Image (cartoon, rainbow, N blue to C red; front, side, top):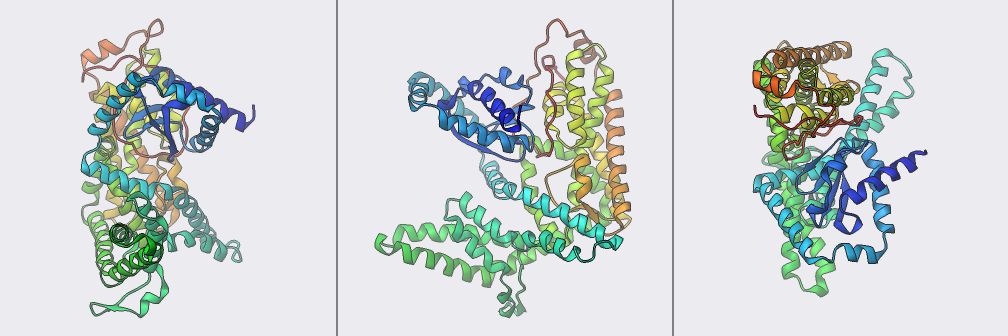
Length: 509
């Protein structure tokens, strides 16, 4: 079977299990998930969907999210869109014409949306929607930058390294424009106007302008300035739409939008955002230099709970700001230790439940992806439903983060040139203020600490006597799948996992 046929087959298997073409109002994807807007949630066959070999799990948020893994999701999404487009209009109409089902689905969707639609979570979701589409370019340029640095250090291919530097740096030099474009789009404005205002920040000519007694510099304020400028442009544009006559709208509205928000950006936002960005960089450097072990312990230990609450999205602009300023983010390698703790915890669960073939199959199939930073199958299929192993996984992540934070205190910064990957997949993106070999060794040491502590904490403290009695049983004859708790979006991760096997029902901690 060709790759295209395989992707179409996956899409064809998913489509009827989510209620058919008529039940889908929107289709999109991020790095690992197919995101579907559904008209009637009750038509979805969750268990059958989770049982598909290509599906790692499902997550409910503002959209219904099917976890397929990176690469796979980018290919299955257009195949699904093509299948929907090929569905006869009569079938779509028939599927959506039942008033009682539509009302039931609307009620379910409204309840789910209400639970996940606090103002703060909605704001963080917008932030994620602005930055997540940029991650593939950040990864690609980051790997090229790492390769270029290696070639320069080795003295190889001197005629090629300037070209690689240009390829790696071009996107970062203009990232503010992309942030402005996505911000305006997300906040309901005209995307190109958001990009136009944000482009002022990276224009070389701003160096001739003096604000508050200081010369501006191109790029001052970075992505935070671009975000603020684009949001301001959206509000100016909406004000103009209300008051400018329709006959003049096409001329006056874009002119006033760019002029007013542009002047505000030059004479206010660039300076303020520049100070904030500099403060973020200085604080991260100071924190890890003076309290690196403790800060790393807290960050590594709390990241999985932050993911479960959706609060990890607030870190995306911070990562991007650090990459802009320093060339790498020192926070991501520490946060990646949460995945190491999760892997160690899963291995301990495997050892503690020798008779439970269902859970052991899930772990065996999901561990390779876990090593590569794909955490969803282990989180939602093993540790979170069991309860205590999720806590002990956090302990493993805390010790791994503390290990890397300790070396930051000792003067060796370990950073990543891009956001998105974790686990072993982060190795090509590692960078720091010392040699690459030392940076890789420290990160690998942190992973090892996370694995070992996650394993030991789970093995000795992750199971009560009752939990062992309930789950260390033969499940071959009859096994019901674990039902993970509905949650906000977990951390993105880069590699698809094999099919998780079903596991028994969740236990009380």
